[in-house]
Length: 473
Image 1 (cartoon, one colour):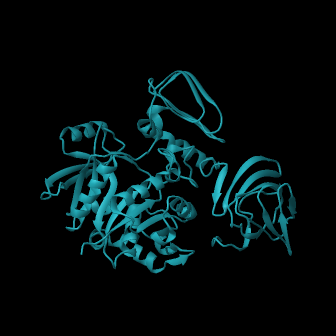
Image 2 (cartoon, rainbow, N blue to C red):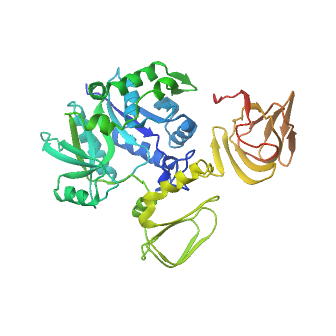
Image 3 (tube, one colour):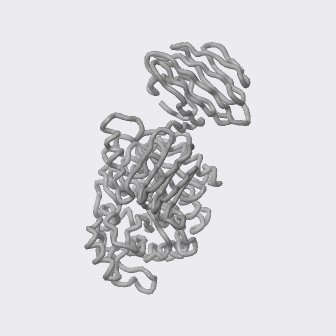
């Protein structure tokens, strides 16, 4: 019997070139940038359509685990069908592939490895490419998907094909070329034998483990130690922290694919984008007759070849061209479209300045719901909280701040010291400094709360937890 296909979705990207919409706590794979669904949801549904409703493995940062679970549940993928592995820190794709393969080693399925943040159009062509790749992978080849290069782009890696692999439609890989200068990229494309490297793969579980052992035994050994030290955490598999931290960081392309004699490429004829920058999103977007792409409440006059991305307020442009304009609640980006790849430099400057705008939006998602900042000043901060039905914050206290909660809608159950309070709409309570407290939603609709914090320090690290149903420390 032929081995099954397991979808492996790598969900660890940061998406810094799509700042200020993509941020560390909510990177691009969790955002609806191309369709009405998030990139992660589109990836999972696309893979299911190609291989059937089989097993799925997602590897993500531990900070994003509840986002992954919730977004999969929204598209009908139950906890029982999804295996979610938690990385304590990013170690690039070789380590991620290694732990995914070790987790499935006994059954030896074909692993279809996909990035969570790509956009693909052409479902039939994608399904056909996956089918052919799986067939080649079952002959012990390590298969990558090559995308027809439409322009010489120095931002992509390239694959140069060699001889055909029988009549499979695949070719042996002659060599990989990592982000060549534009002139070299043009020369490669001119040969008719080069493709963009999509970063998607198909290979047998035991075969890729064998090749990791041959070419990067240190990465495989580190992954084995991390798996041996792994523990169940509310249905997630939390990798051993110290072992994974010690695991070398390298991409699977360089660790294995560039070194193995078993690399093959399937030429793919579907439309593909890594959605790697605002320029890439402009390429993907539907445009008006002047070449403009817009999202949100946007008014454009005498504007050409621009992307205008509005969040909640009107954005108007007049007499400009070739611009990227991205407006969010707390940050505005204005950039020349040709410089969209350099947005990450802005993010690095924010980090060096110890600013928070690279880390999170005003709305911050938590496993119980979300909170968003409304106002802040000297010794006070105002937030809006949404608590999902049946959810609860941790039992906690603060050493340096007090809190006042007002119920806007829904019903709240509040633990305050030794007391339990039940609050309805327009009712409120006060939590003094140093008092143990918990907020719960016992109802069937979202609970909306206005929280006013006051005190000498209002940072999120002033939380001492005593109980938490989500396993946070």
